Amino acid sequence: MSDSQPQQPFHSPRGGNGNAAAPEGTTLLLAGARLTDGRTVDVRLGGGRIQAVGTAGSLLSPTLSRVDLGGYLLLPAPAEPHAHGDTALTADVEGPVSYSPDEVQRRATEAALLQLGHGATAMRSHVRIGDVHGLGPLEAVLQARRSLRGLADLTAVAVPRLLTGVAGADGLAMLRDAVKMGASVIGGCPDLDPDPSGFLEAVLGLADEHGCPVDLHTDGDDPARLSRLAAMAGGLRPGVTIGPCGGLSRLPLDAATRAADQLAAAGVRVTCLPQGDCAALERRGLRTAPVRLLRAAGVLVAAGSGALRDVGNPVGRGDPLEAAYLLASQGGLRAAEAYETVSACARAAMGLPEVRVEAGFPAELLAVRGERIAGVLSLAYSRIVIHRGRVVARTSAVREYCDSAVAVALDLPRQGRTEPGP
Image (cartoon, rainbow, N blue to C red; front, side, top):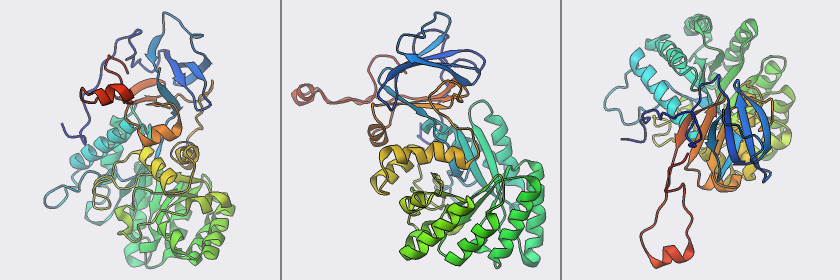
């Protein structure tokens, strides 16, 4: 079976065999998990939240469903702030890509399940509206959102092409309809409109009217345009996010620094795409936004995946840990900072509640086989994903070497275990 296809669901009995996938209303014990501070703990989940965190062995109860997390690092789950479910998995399609509702729903669902398997329990999908397809792709993604309820949280961003001039009148009317249909975020690409400032005015006005967040595509290579955006977006709640902003990396340092300061002062968040641009910007720039410069200015920077095997990136993985790996290996961030961009920062950019491995916080968690964040970013194969307090996805990997004296003598490391386990 291709790795682009979700496997059959696993079925786990209630009890202590380490494979529990308890219903959301039950209580689940995560036993022997390692935290980033080096402690080994038990974590009890219930009602979709973390009920208690105690030393290993302190929360045992015969009535609890149990998952053995010995050898796993337990982390707040990633979130995916920038996906394109309507175009995902189309790179290998022969002939014209179908945008029939059934096909778009299938692609959006499959893409979301792939991202869920990687660890993202919440996704924000940008969906183009207008042109010949109208609102059909958006309705299909909204249907995918409904079908995924209980597995992952999927939100849709309505992305019109034009909003100004005669052609833009239809786009603005369709954008209003999209919000009424259930698009919870308003998007678009002002760079591609003949009147970028007019586009921003239309989007921000509609967002203010409906109380919606804004998430815009921009290359970020025009300091004057970024300055206008910051000035216009400063008072909008629940906030404005822009990305991927690769063009900021091509600006002179002083211009980029001024732009970063203006974005920070206005509270504008940036979502970078370390795995490559998405097709919405027509491949304008292939550089990642200057993450360190933006963070130093006080900008909240999240990292997303962008294209997932479509024309924007035919080899996209949709893996938040790969985005974090690239920021740690090439973007100059420490491993913990890089992971934060795909977890805490991504959730904040999406307006989601904070997650910590502490009592009272949402039970949105990712267990990865390994001991430290740097290690799991390098070799994160085995993963257990927890959404609303229950196991919703699991990837188990075992690395074995041929029968040789060298392998035995060096005691080479493995991913996973040969005996049954999570």
